[in-house]
Image 1: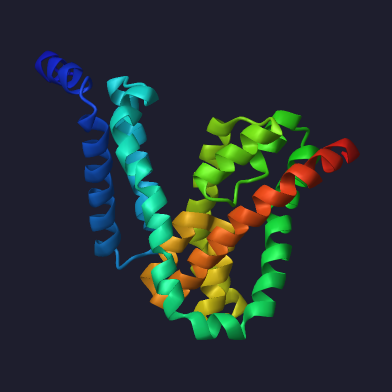
Image 2: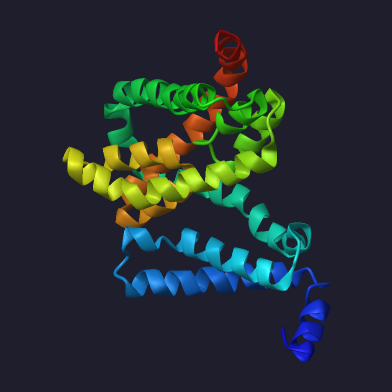
Length: 242
């Protein structure tokens, strides 16, 4: 790095707003690219923004804690943003009541499948108990998943990475999966991606339609609730079995 630029970076890295600015600029650049590519799933803006940020932090030798001093402001907004998702869901209230039973059945089956299949595959591959506990809540939104993993004896930092990877994979692949299965109903599409790919999948669903986004938000919230309630009871028994 050029000495003058290096000195400027050292100065800027001491200010909390650096992490916030980098995050916003990286996402804006990723969003621009995504729009230019006609919203192609493989150019998911979260994936591109994360790649940009990782590259900048690696090239500049900036540790994560320094970056997060500023980026935590974005993290704080996750709570209000999640609550605000209730507004479009209310607009779908009639459709929601008509689909109540299928939604509940899908929620239970999908939530347990997401967690238990991940733990089962990890166990068969010889993963440690700590790794399995970190992997189990991968389909739950990040703050809740980290709390679940910590309570189960996993590594919250590892869980955060796995959750983000799961969300990006779900957002990128969902359209192709739905096309292959010939699923066209936006409510069904939204609920499925929200259940499997939490917040990142929900953001992708809102780009498709308000109905898809509303059902994705519902699935994300309910999945977080049922996973937090069931995993502490099921996983200890399951790990002893393996």
